[in-house]
Amino acid sequence: MATTTQVNQKFQPQLIDPPLAQLLFNDIRMSWLWLGLRLYLGYTWLTSGLGKLSNPAWFGEGAGTALTGFLKGALAKMEGPRPDVQGWYGGFLETMVLPNAPVWSHFVVVGEILVGAALILGLFTGVAAFFGGFMNVNFLMAGTVSTNPFLFVIATWLVLAWKTAGWLGLDRWVLPKMGKYLSPGKTSST
Image 1 (tube, rainbow, N blue to C red):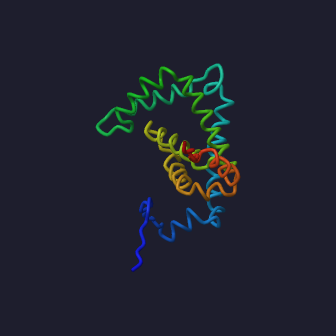
Image 2 (image 1 turned 180 degrees about the horizontal axis):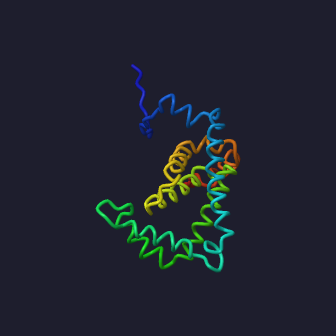
Image 3 (image 1 turned 45 degrees about the horizontal axis):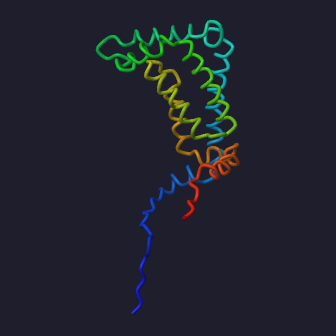
């Protein structure tokens, strides 16, 4: 009687995505859809950042002036039975951001430009979309609705579709090369 045994093999369950998720997030034919959304979101961030870059109230000798006005408006929204800005976030804005408005102003400008450029180029698409979404959430928590919910949804989709969203971009060539350096190496036995 023959028996088979598995030696030093661990059981690894496979989780299979539904067909629609496979199509949207794993099929390079959908990269055209993600390219359109990626370019739209990237253009939105890049133009916003470049507009602030040329504004001295955001970036330059008066850096922090515009952000201070925004923050004071956000802090005013902490009043009432259902405030637009929650107390814990208002506390963060008041104690951490407002006293350092020039530094945070530069972070906002540089962050918007970097996120926009990375999304347009398709370079580190998932990471860029994540940080773009993070900025959207912070603007939302500061009581500014505007287009932030819509942009956050697009950013979330791009994070989920990171593999195909950057296929028609630099990710197609850069990420495989990065994987070579980021993957765990072999250990030598002595």
